[in-house]
Image (tube, rainbow, N blue to C red; front, side):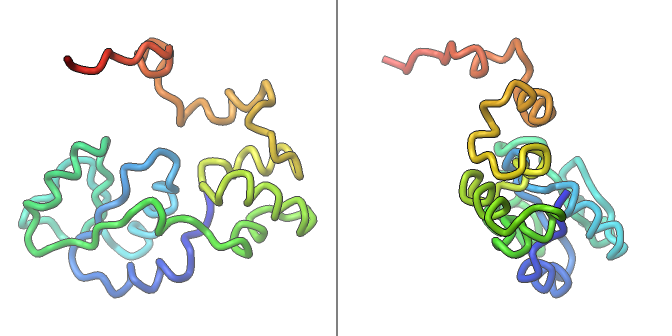
Length: 159
């Protein structure tokens, strides 16, 4: 888990009421949850209700975000991009690695927080995602083996 980017922490602390986490896979939702708990907010897996105390809603899937438009007052709706660390924040999360190694993994991953375990396990290897152990490290972020998208059998387009 990466610490939340500094630019995002300032927005979070200024947000009244609710915050909606992105549904993007591997977008450091655990970091957001840790922030919410330390800030005295409740972490919700269900759609927030009007009488809930200040909250962080972690939607299970992107389709749930359609419900965010129904929430009043309007919450702070975060995108996955807002959880991307800066190159310096990424490097700080990789103690013992050279600046070049950290820069290589940042460039290869685009700073995607879900890639941090790979960057830690394989310093300086931009192609770490091809390593046999990558599946084990990324397993919690991958769809189940019986998922049609993972098997490569996408449904045929209509018509």
